[in-house]
Every structure is written in C-alpha cells, then in structure tokens.
View 1 (spheres, rainbow, N blue to C red):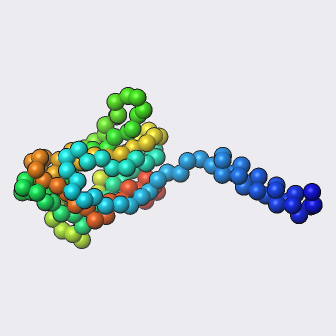
View 2 (tube, rainbow, N blue to C red; view 1 turned 90 degrees about the vertical axis):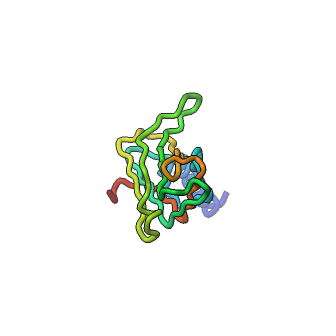
View 3 (cartoon, helix red, strand yellow; view 1 turned 60 degrees about the horizontal axis):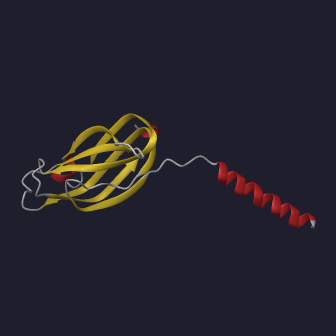
Length: 144
C-alpha cells in the first residue's frame, strides 16, 4: 500500500472512531403544532438538567375556544415504565398577542429523553385546539 493510501486510510478510520465515540447531542429544535388538542404529544429529544419551551404566533379554535391558553406538561420518556411527569405550565401570552411568546422552563431534569403533551386548551374545555406557528425547545442552560 502506498504512503498516500495508507495516510488516507488512517484519516478515514480516525474520523470514523471520532464519530463513533462522540457523545449524543442535546437537541434544540423548532416545529409547529396544528390542531393540537388535549392528548397531543410532541416528538422526543435528549435533554438533561435544563430545558425551555417557547411558543409564538398561537391561536385557539374549536367549539370550546372561549379562553386563550393551553396547558403543557413535560415528561421523561422511560422505557417499559410509566413516564415521569414534571411541572405543568399554562401558556397564554402567545395567544393574547402574536408578537409575545409564551415560555416555560424546567430545571433539575435528569439526563434522558423528554417530550411534552398538551393537557388542555381553553381552560381544558375539551373541545378546543391550539395552533402554534413556532414551537422551540432549547436545552441550552447558558442562555437562562
């Protein structure tokens, strides 16, 4: 094997080992919610210690849409066991004024996979749904 090919192979193997041993990335992400009623579940993400959930440009629809709010609960996804629940927060600012975000913070979380659910919309009327243009999960404690 030539020196050039051997050097390329070493670089390739070193890069593969570096990727294989890299820690899992903490996940910041942005999405949206359309017709999210009670029982809606978000995607899962890896987190630990601290997390923020931001919503902006929110609206409520449905026959029970009398109050401009949504209740959100954080959970740790635990395989083959009931999931651990964390504080429930009521988001209202983003429904009352599109330019004002709603934000919830959760502290002292264990390392694990997390998700949130909508536990109710419009004071948990049962017949209302939330639309959220921007849903952002930020797991970076440095910006608190």
